[in-house]
Image (tube, rainbow, N blue to C red; front, top):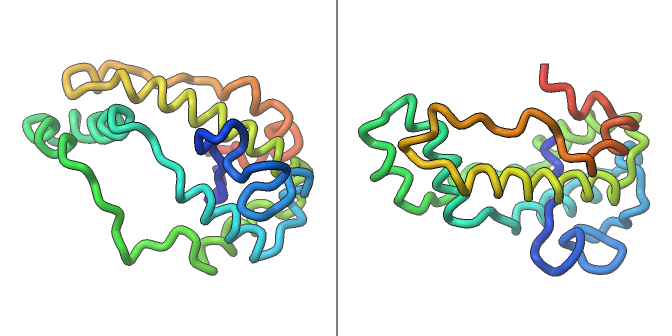
Length: 160
């Protein structure tokens, strides 16, 4: 999926308040995004996060297999973002714009999909522990809320 992501910030909608997200109209088509639009959406999405339980589960899902003896101690420590990593840099956002070219889905449709996918991930990863991480399977299907965006922009969902 694209670097440009949206999820609920708990304010009862798509994280931007009203009819915008990151300062961009929810009715704007993704394929019409400018660099400024994509950066606004990216920055808004970076301000949102998963619960501590889900963060632990994401860590455990990787470490339980790679370093099982270190899983509990490593994943219990809160992770700090790498200050040199800027997912909203012009270069990163430009890559997203390339992915979005020709996409007919609106930001609102994409946001609804990302809200639902975020909730699905939160629910799954909140149940992952170091003990069960190697046997738990994440949901195989995207949430139903992704149908419109997936139909209008299938390349964004191509994981191959």
